[in-house]
Amino acid sequence: MKESIFSVPVKVRYYDTDLSRAVFFTNYIKWFDSIALPDFTDALGIDWRSLLDQNVDAVIAHVSFDYKAPCYLDDVVDIHITGVDIGKTSMTIYGALYKEKALVAEGKLVYVFVDYTTRKPEPIPRFFKEKINAHIRDIEKEG
Image 1 (cartoon, one colour):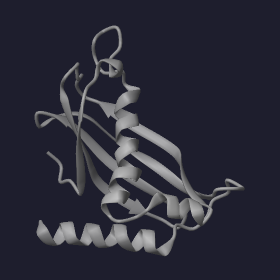
Image 2 (cartoon, rainbow, N blue to C red):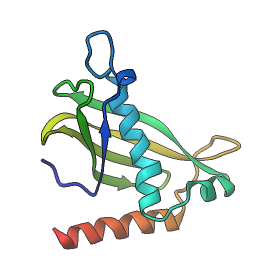
Image 3 (cartoon, rainbow, N blue to C red):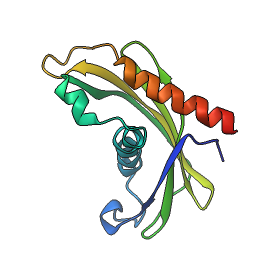
């Protein structure tokens, strides 16, 4: 299992599955996106609403996922953030999803920070970068 800097378990619900009774592939991306910014940033003490109040948002510019194994109703999927690369206006979050320690999917999401009104790229706020980088340094010290 890859080293994790943040993780959240998700239980597969009926509405996550398709006619084959497996999780529909887009749900892996949805789950990962839902922890990548809201859950991870909340855990770091970053209030997303405060960014919106500053007219800053983040939009997904690129998604890349590789699927390794299916998940089914009532499985618990552990969603891990395994790395973060932060640039001037974009941030790439890498992740891996596991079921009982077996890799089921891995990939990345690229977010571009934008002016909420114009939707044009904006620099990532300094405090945002600092909190994420501090968390990663703390994890590396523990490891």
